[in-house]
Image (cartoon, rainbow, N blue to C red; front, top):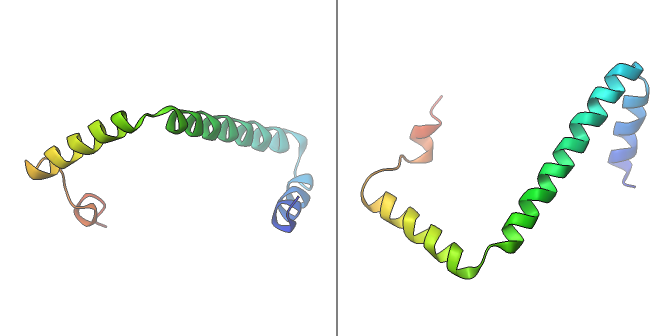
Length: 74
C-alpha cells in the first residue's frame, strides 16, 4: 500500500462509522465503475475506434462541435 493511501485511511479512521461507511460505499462504486470502463475500452475493436474517429472528424468538419475553451468558458 502506498504512503498516500495509508494517510487517507488513517484520516478516514478518525471519522464516525457512518461516514466511513459512506466513503467506503462511494469508493467501491468508483472502483467498479473504473473497472467497467477499462473493460469497455479493452473490448473496443480497432474498427469501432476508426468509426468513432470518423464520426468526430465529420462533426468537427460540419461545425457541430465547440472548441473546449468555448464549451467550458468561465
